Image (cartoon, rainbow, N blue to C red; front, side, top):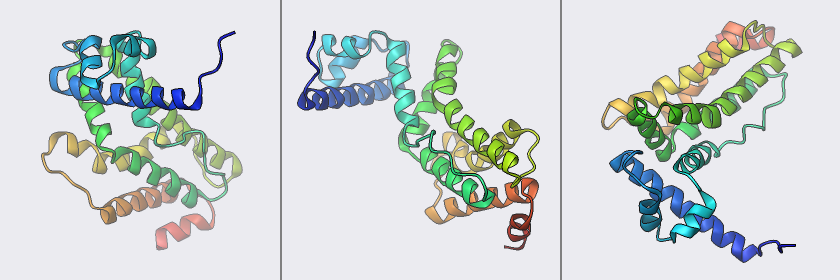
Amino acid sequence: MTPAPSAYHQRVAEEKRALIVRAATELFLEFGYDRVSLARVADSAGVSKATLFKQFPTKAALFDAIVIDSWAENDVADVPPAGDLTAGLTILGRRYATLLSQPGMADLFRIVIAELPRFPELAKAHFSQGKLPYFESVQTYLTAEHEAGAADIADPKMAATQFLGMISNYLFWPSLVLPGWTVTPARTTAVVEEAVRTMVARYGTGPAVENARGR
């Protein structure tokens, strides 16, 4: 029976993994996904090829790790409790804004967009392993609010798309095409609050709607 790795060896493995993922992201951005070999990533990360292949046997597996790490800043399993639509959406909106503000997130989208014509599987991996779990957590929350009677949402998938779109369309997408696009923390807060108010006014029931409209 193979003994379990010690805490020290686990820490070393995690540190090397982080170096590999960081080096791969930088190389994919500079040279493109197709032109970067795993051997080149290993050299840039300062690890042996054996170490890299042990953690990432294929380049696709390495890209998957980049996606997962980029979206892992938020615990998608931690869905707010139902009963207060304004409070729950505010939590989810702030998480999403923080996630999109990571420098690595814009880099990840640039890799996917640049390689989409030749490697559509990268976009599929990005969606299925990155955005989809987060999107589903918002959809799950909205479904729970509907079932609790705090919201009247016939199509939670549509509502989740609307909510996340209101935030990303201001905070994130312009940064990919407009040099120097920046959003202040105060503006970020305002964008999330307006998205929440719009959602509550459209889908909320009871006193929460009046509060959102009168705020």
